[in-house]
Image (cartoon, rainbow, N blue to C red; front, side, top):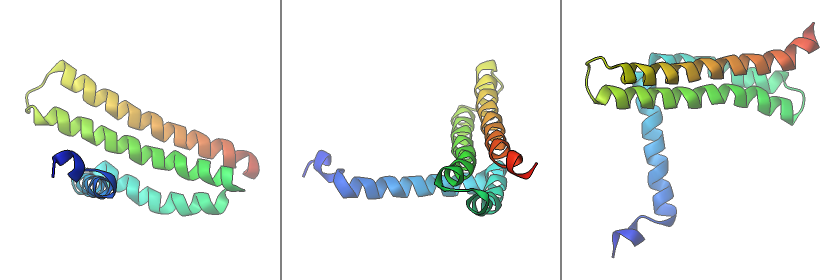
Length: 124
């Protein structure tokens, strides 16, 4: 049977799930920032589900923080790819890492903005 038929359908999806879980484990194991954000997630997600009034607010509160995790995963991927080429310093390598880090900062800022816009008017 050709490789085309062997890597389709449910088998392909199953393997993709395995690769994704492997990536999550690797990021958790090797990236302290991701571990810290997971710790915050364990607090923020239940809090967002509790404080949100209605499905839209709950979705915004939770997903704004989940986006931080997604961006951190991408940041970690950029860092790993850059580090793969060697430890020597290069301005483009530094720029790539800085830009990816800036994306994490912006995602955290956005999450704080979403939480503030939803919750501050209610409690002020």
